[in-house]
Image (cartoon, rainbow, N blue to C red; front, side):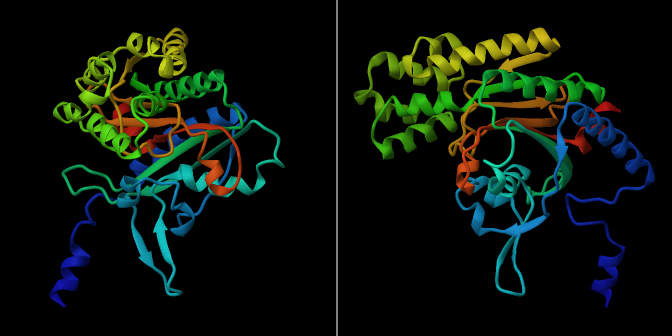
Amino acid sequence: MRRRTEILTSSYPAGVRALLPDDVRRRRRVESAIVAELETRSFEEIVVPIIDFVDPYGGAADRESQRRSYRFVDRDGELIAVRSDFTPMVARALAPSIGRTPMPLRVFYRGDVVRCEATKLGAQRELFQIGAELIGDDSPAADLAMFTLALQLVANAGVTPTAVITDSSIARQLVESSTESPAARLALRSALAHKRIASLADFEDELAPERFELLRRVTAGRATLDDFIALPATRDAATELRVLQQRAFEATGANIVLALDDIDEEPGYYTGIRFQLFEPRTRLRLAQGGRYDDLYSRFGAQAAAIGFTLTVDYLDGAAR
């Protein structure tokens, strides 16, 4: 009985909280402004469930995403996951109608995501997000439009963000053009992702000296866009990234930082540009997004897509 009393009178589980009237008013103010801007730009709202079967997402989420999701077995013995990432769920919902719907398609969504983050002071496990996707347009113009839209929405909320951008295809093309061995590609990507310069020594004998030096520069965080523009395998993506950075700066005046050494051991579903928007002082991540042209094919449809999500809780806090 004492244990039950302690639970009833204790704080909530780590990473979640109740919102009182003042909190709700602030959240709704930020939310309403974002939704109004999206609707003005012809984005239409969709709603996806907060739980779904795990099986359909087997190839659509990397191990890190799977690790962060809350899972349980329901009464029918089905393995169920609580929503931790909107993007794959949106692709699963829209994929059956791709081909019958005029393109490009503009959609937005909002709601909570729940993630099993490491327990630490201030870490939030339940977050309210709003996201937008442009589906069926694989052009650089679409990348620029969605990136600048994310910047504008954050600025409209009263925050001047720092944007960190990269292109996931550059790392993939760099690794694939360095070796034909699948095992070596995995080891090389791991060395780049974890900044293990010493591990690159395993590849020195099989790589041309200039390629080995470039990999060392990437791992040390010293590679530049010029390095990748000079490499045939990465020239197109690096050139487009430079143009995107220049045009986005001209359009918004935002502080845009390149992160060419931002390489994940598992690439996840991103296939091109990837960006994150931070509050400059606290480094709190307010928004993230990018291009994922292969995601819809995992649900039986072919459609290029780019999108982003904004974390309303963080936007509200950063703007105060």
